[in-house]
Image (tube, rainbow, N blue to C red; front, side, top):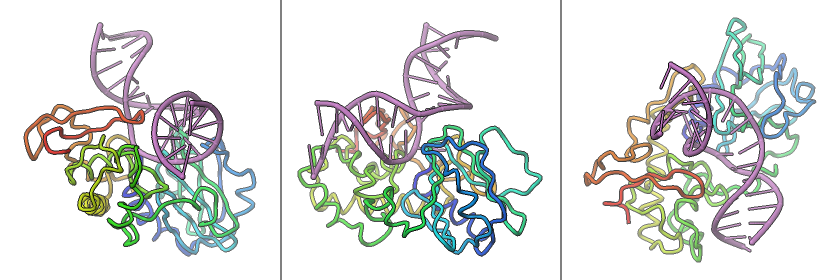
Length: 271
DNA sequence: ACTTCGACCTGTTGGC
DNA sequence: TGCCAACAGGTCGAAG
């Protein structure tokens, strides 16, 4: 479910509620996420204050006094700010209960998400240490993309969805960025000119930044910390638009499969 | 070093 | 209306 804009929307939503708060208790109802939630999580983090709420790629990082809670929302995860009265539903796996009585509640029906603990610098954690640059930072630029796409036979779509190349670009925003840049998702990454790398980098930054301002994309179950959906779905040009006329050239949007994922693009304006 | 593919899960949808 | 295959916003790790 959540790509970078949804995770960033969640981060911004929860930060004011939990930063500087003390974790009074932790309730884990189901440990079986993608990796087991550490048995000792409660012991590690209870009575500690949240010092920071950061994001690296699609990972949320809760900085405590002695380490960091690493949270990933997988395909179907969401975090909400609740109170003690909020009804616990079927897939509500974890509660972080704070001194101000607020509860940060993780829901994840498919359980592809993760809640992990690290006592060291989180950037050195195995899952984070080999991630590529943040797409909205200057280190992700056309020169970088050009250099890292040389001699790559994989499609440009799979390259920009590769978190070791650049983080945060999932299926929706890969499709939308390639549409804006006029690039066919099947094109071999190594065949992009410097100019087209520049176009693509700009498109990725634009799409992600605009989606963040809309609170992300809600297709089915993404919700913000306050239970509201994101509104970027109204700004999508190709994702989920199979058969509909392209907004630019009128040709029907095509749907294909790449790397076992659906790709949507306009055969008229993407080459 | 790179690419592809299976695996992990539950819930919803679309075609018959 | 009901059944069931196909599919859904991710990504690791094994195999080629």
